[in-house]
Every structure is written in C-alpha cells, then in structure tokens.
Picture 1 (cartoon, rainbow, N blue to C red):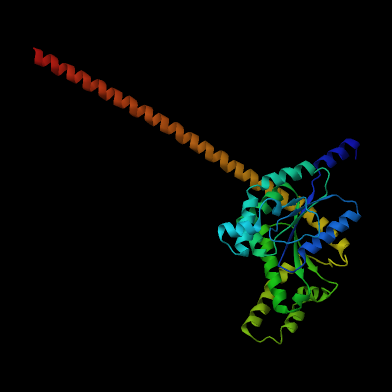
Picture 2 (picture 1 turned 30 degrees about the vertical axis):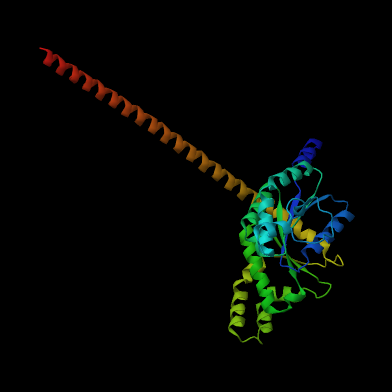
Length: 325
C-alpha cells in the first residue's frame, strides 16, 4: 500500500461509538470507567458522553454531560413530574441540541478512536423513547456504532431473570438493528459460564427449570426454545468492571462488530438514504407537475371567462343598437 493510500485511509477512518445499555444496577457506568481506564493504558484516545441526567456522581470525566445542559430536578419541579418522567423530559430537551454534540465529535473525529455513550439506568427510557431512537439513529448514521448490552451476572442465576434479560436483549437488537455484544458483568462475583451453558444447551436450561412447574415456568421453557437460533448468532463476553477481567475479549468482540457495521449495516443505511432521497425527488416531481397542471387549469379558466365576458359585451352592444333604431 502506497503512502497516499495509507493517508487516505487514515483520513476516512471514523471512531467507533459504543452505546452502553442495560438495566439499573448492572454496572454500566462502572464498566464504562473500566473501559476508559483500559483505553487510557493503551494510549487510545476516546470521547465520553453522559446521557443520564439523574446520576449523582460520575467515576469518569465526561466530555459532554447532559447535566450541564438540563437540570433534572428543575425539570421535575417545573413540569410536575416524577423521576422517570423527569429523566425522559430531560433527555427529550437534550435531544433537540444533539446536532451540536455531533459537531463536537466531528471536530475530534480524526483524533479519537472510540466514543463512549453512557445511557440512563431506566432502560426503557432510552431504548423505547423517541429521543433515544433519534440519538441512536443519528449516531449510527454518522459513525460505526456497536450496542453493548450489559447484564448483571449474579442476578441472572435465576432462570426467570436470565430469560427476562434475553428477551430484553433480542428486543433491543431488533429495535436498533445494530451490531450487538452481550456483556455479562460482575464475573468476579459469579462466573458467566452457566449462562453460556444455558444458551448453548437447551436441555441444561430445561433441567434448571424443572423445579418451576408454574405457568410462568412453562412459558419460559418454551421461550428458550424459540431463542435458540438467536443465541447462535450472538457475541457473548464475560467481564468484570471491578478487576478488568475480560477486556481483551470484549474489544475483540467490538472489533468484529465494527467490521459487521461496515460490511452489513452501512450498505443498508446507504440504500435506505438513497431510497428516501428518491422518494423525496419523486414527491417533488409530482408536486411540480401538479403545480404546472393547476397553473394551466387557471389559465384555461381565465381565458374561458375572458371569452365569455367578450361575448356578453358584444351581445349587450347589439341589443343597445337594436333599441336605438
């Protein structure tokens, strides 16, 4: 590869955006700080964005912090909202200025390798809200984006909780349609090996469900069979935000997910944008043709009215001459 090609490749290189999504208490923010420290040890530059307006204290220094723009408590007081409504409204208000955040990232894009985005602990507020969808779509349209779905491994020891997490994971995967990495956190407390076994071996999960003879247990057993194909195409990593265990495996999965974005998601996105542009062009053409048709119709009506007036005037003149005779 020539020096010119290498320079061109460097110029077109974009940072990878990592979206940290997970239920409250799974350790998203702590894991982000661990990843931040890991990248710092590798001397890899990064840009950090905090989207949680209700967090009291951050273990890292954010480049962009929603709390600097929107006061969560004032929003609750002004609009008479509860905590969840306050977080959602604060996120909505921040989203109206998110184009400025993209401008800041763009200015640094040639100097940074990763953009770390911390989301609110109330998972549904980000994943199922209009503001969360706008932020996700906007970021993924501009930069390679990978979703990190964080799971609390000790809590997943219960088959019911494990299945709840898997259903959340599959819903987020199909909602975002982005490269996805399932991250089992807190492996320093409980190893995630039992989760891997349940995902690979249907009978092992059924054995764990034997003691639950309720309707819910029967439903969960059926769901595990449905999700078997989902498990086969999923990237799964076990990490510890406390000890730093599993960081190498995590970034290997992120690298593979980034390649998936470039080979699969980006072409689809470009096709969607092209289709949208074609539809808009077609709509403009239809509106133009309709406008031209309306103008011609108006001209025809005006000409007809003018001829009618002239005929009426001629008839009036003839009648007056008749009377004068």
